[in-house]
Amino acid sequence: MFKYVLKRIGYMFLVLFILSIVIFMIYNLTPSNRAYTDAKADQVAMKQQLAGMSAEAQAKWFEERYEMYQISYGTETNNMILRYLRWVGLYPYADNPYTGKEGKLNGLLQGNFGYSYQYKKDVVNVVAAPMKNTIFINIFATILALAITIPLGIACAVRKNSKFDRFTQVFTIIGYSLPSFIICILFIWVFCALLGWFPASGMKTPGSSYEGFKWFTDRMYYLALPLITMTFCSLGSMTRYVRASMIDALSMDCIRTARAKGVKEKTVIYSHAWRNALIPIVTMIVGWFTSIFAGSLIFEDMFGLNGMGKLMISSLRTSDYDVTILMQLFYVVVALLGNLVIDIVYGLVDPRVRVNK
Image 1 (cartoon, rainbow, N blue to C red):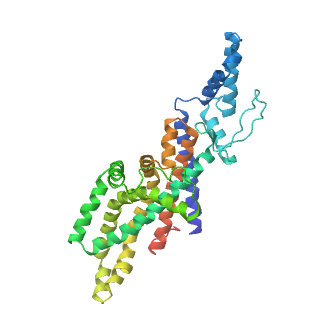
Image 2 (image 1 turned 180 degrees about the vertical axis):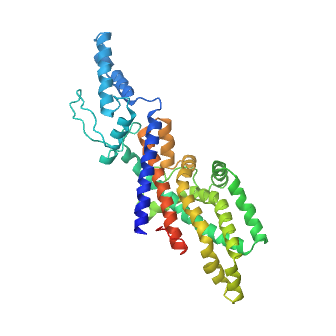
Image 3 (image 1 turned 30 degrees about the vertical axis):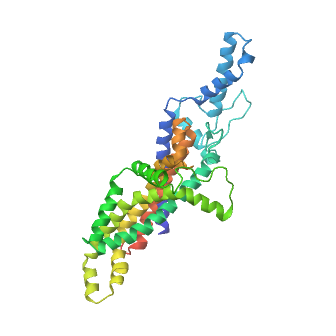
């Protein structure tokens, strides 16, 4: 098992390396020039000081300013490979004659994840709070969804073709068919505009500075509707998947044998059948958990939550690519870890699967 995990982690680093190259190249090919923008901003700020200079002197000053920023950002060369190595931290930046700074390694490996052009601070400080909120929201929504869908799917499989099963299938297919942003709009209209039970957006009471349990209850009051919406959107696919897996498991010969021996029905369902149905369900659960990080983009933007989804959209709109690249790499790491967890859980759930081969 240990050797297998190490081997998979090695593959993960290889995939992460390849995808980091692709992501870096895509964003660096976009029509954006941070050095030129900063040099232009300095020119505008120093307009009065430059007024007494000739046109040639002003042009020379601008070119030197522009080159200074290019060297600082490592974009003075058009060699994308060299830029990538500098970004990662495997190749030093050039000496900057304008600032007197000596070139050195200053990339991801040295803890430099970039600078947010929009928020005027390091990317790590920008992403820290939204990442905590996103992880909290998604973990809470996952636990809530599993607590509902697994018992509901098992009940539908045991009572196959009953009125309860048919009603559940009709109810879940609605959530499965409607786009998530439509469901968000409907829930906001019903629970906020009509009933007035929940706030439409935000994460806390405006102007409040609660602490302790009061802070938690206020936060959960604002997160209640987003969590309900995320759970409802996941009910359709997850419930139907659990139901289908349990129906297949209940039709196995070993289940018939257990019932013929007089084993209690609860033992047959929750011990024998559920264990055999876990393999496809584990794949779905872990895969769904990793995908909701991407799906939370819509929910966070619709409900005005300070999460990675809202930050991602805002960064794309303002061309704040250092923030966007870091979040894209985060989603890649989450997906890779999810695949590793799926393979490990396989061996724990089904003894017939050996993950060390």
